Image 1 (cartoon, one colour):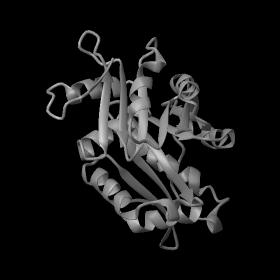
Image 2 (cartoon, rainbow, N blue to C red; image 1 turned 45 degrees about the horizontal axis):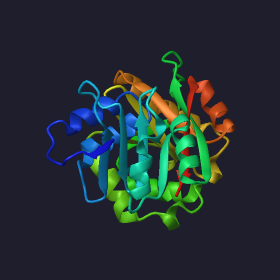
Image 3 (cartoon, one colour; image 1 turned 120 degrees about the vertical axis):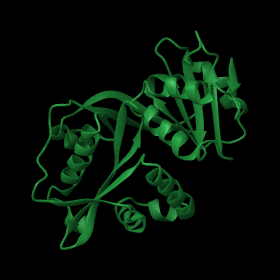
Image 4 (cartoon, rainbow, N blue to C red; image 1 turned 60 degrees about the vertical axis):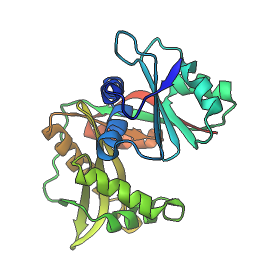
Length: 263
């Protein structure tokens, strides 16, 4: 049985973080959202009935996307009744082992399956010789993402996007890195989510005219150094095997599959 966590529940954050911290992608993403934003009008959290005071499964909705996490051994359909009566949501994200049964139960099309990769803790590429700096230049970040990812600029609510990143950067949960050539930022990456155990590298992008120079790996390596310097495990997601091969020289290894399905 699912219950909605009360905004005023004393155990709300404890139950949420205890569950989310076990997963390098979900935990890092959602605990960052929790710490940076708290609860908002578009945020709902549900937990499976706690076992021995510790939540074993959780459903979180943020910006219309449902994130799902559950311990091994929990029936993946524990969220089905909530999802069937939920008035709105755009997509489901979570481990493939959780989402595949739900997608079948709910009649959802399969959109994307990606790899969650974690760092081996031993491989640290040299980034000397590259001009890489931490920055808070969100407008330039948005420009690079829009130039590199088809439809991103047209389909993103800039005000909400900017407010989300500004809150996370201001709270110390997100770092933004640029690689510069001749004084201009031409590639970027984020350490954009973190919990007490892990941080995730994301939004690695290089302007088309500057590709083929190793800039993507270099800026990713700089983000990796920041994560390891904080004593955290580094993780990332990639949707294609070619991207998994791209990150392998940095010491990233395939851990599990992450799935996105749309209503």
